[in-house]
Amino acid sequence: MGYKEEYLNALESPESYWAEQAKAISWFKAPETILEKTEHGTYCWYPDGELNSCYLAVDKQIEEGRGEQVALYYDSPAADKKEAITYNQLHERVARFAGALKGLGVEKGDRVVIYMPMIPEAAVAMLACARLGAIHSVVFGGFAANELAIRIDDATPKLILTASCGIEFDKKIAYKPLVDKAVELSTHKPSHTVVCQREMLTAEMDPARDLDWYEFQEGAQPADCVPVKGSDPLYILYTSGTTGQPKGIVRDNGGHAVALRYAFNNVYGMQAGDVWWGASDIGWVVGHSFIVYGPLMGGGSAIFFEGKPIRNPDAGTFWRVIEEYGVNSMFCAPTAFRAIRKEDPEGALSKNYNLSSLRWVFVAGEKLDSSTYDWLSGLLGVPVIDHWWQTETGWPMTSPMMGWDNPSEARLGSTNKPIPGYDIRVLDGDGNDVEPNESGNICVTLPMPPGVAWSIWNKPQRYIDSYLTAFPGFYHTGDGGFKDDDGYIYITGRTDDVINVSGHRLSTGEMEEVVSAHPAVAECAVIGVTDSLKGQLPVGLIVLKAGEEISEEDLEQELVARVRDQVGALACFRRAVVVDRLPKTRSGKILRAILRKIAAAESYKMPSTIDDETILPEIEEVLKERGFV
Image 1: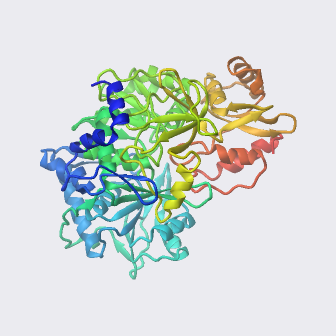
Image 2 (image 1 turned 135 degrees about the vertical axis):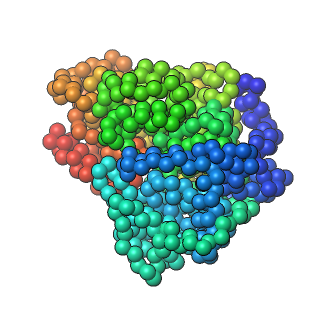
Image 3 (image 1 turned 90 degrees about the horizontal axis):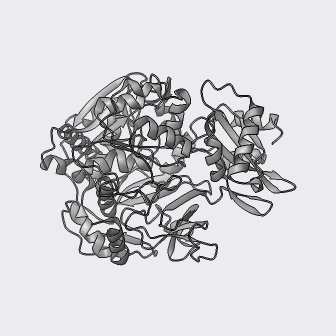
């Protein structure tokens, strides 16, 4: 069956389509109700089915004969450690850890906060919670104590699971003091903190509250999988909200399991036994969906990587990992490849490795510019596939279906066609469909497919207000873009990444595409600054490739000419400023909203997700020197 027929089936008969897909996973009790509208006006899939996500990810794989297959390849250039963990070994660790949690009183429905680096114990912790029916909430390791305290008060966890430290390049970040401070700040007090001591930096323990990771497991009886309803929460994942208060996105067990199995096989084209690398962190949705749950539920071998694409020891780290483990496909943010390219512009280090196992590479999270696409596809000689999704959806919304015959061809600038189940529309401000190739608000017709979050923890009305109110009957993604004549989706950026120049609404993403194609540019961000005459004017913040000697004046002239030629004189792009680096979240997204505030001399709050706080003062100083602030 081809894409068109599958897509129409999912569109016209969503319940029957997703009832069929649900047969791919093993239920303890098959769902009788496929789709149900909740009391808050959202939709839940498979609410009365019974299953266990840990069983699907671990036990079921062993039952199917994969016990001695590697489940997780742990690779940490940061800690100089490697480990191959089979499904049998993972089962032993998870069942024992779950038994120890059970001994501390953790039960179905309890919350557990996980604040850990990318070490195997973190995956064990997630799966052990799922095994008991407990709800885990992973907080990215290194978040400030105040941010962690806010999440503790919102989730009210019974326990906190942490490690003594994380590693950022050559720097060791002590986690335990951050956790202690967070508990001190929070109103809710978890009963215990369980600490995994790492040899490079051990933590001081409070015997009244703290438990050693391995000691507390001694004598614990392995725990069995606890059946949960399809509608029961699997996890809470906090994403920063525009109000400053994080939103606890709730993911259910049933829809999540069906969606991830579907995506791993059909979207990513992976099968049991394949080696998959989600180059992200468990603190983000990619880590939940496609480092831990998706690959394991699909019987794959997943790379669990702790490190950076450069300086571990060099910009050839990614190529070394692909060769060493025979990676068949991977997922990464474009910013990681831009960092590699900045350090190794010609990609010379890739020639030192055999990359023949690689079938294709997926990218998402940031706009894939043509320059990075051309460099990466030329270097690897495999399809480089742009696709698009959000924390709230938990799995892709647009992508070619690489597990099917004749997947949709790539179109540069597009994240491809909608995946079956997603009826994606482009609407004007009044909620009307716009014409093909006309920009508008990217929205999705309700109901969304399985796996999409349908509530915010403790705040269901906030979900309605955030996503379902602006355009009744639709989920509002917050992204802007357009759809071409053939149904390909083009995401031009968040709807606030549009500037108004003399009445013309222009996409900064379009200008970034042109600027980033300059041979000297490693990466860039285009922001709007206030202008008394034209309202706003675009300014490019530019990071040069390693070894580039072009003067800032010459670069600016060349970029101005490129934008004028390819976007038009109406863009009024006249200024380009060279900076050493751009501020990003730890998942690699450029913090454009903060850059706009700096350029407007507005006050801003240091984002909890920022990778390096010292970058913002650097940018502020440069913009002051250039007269923008």
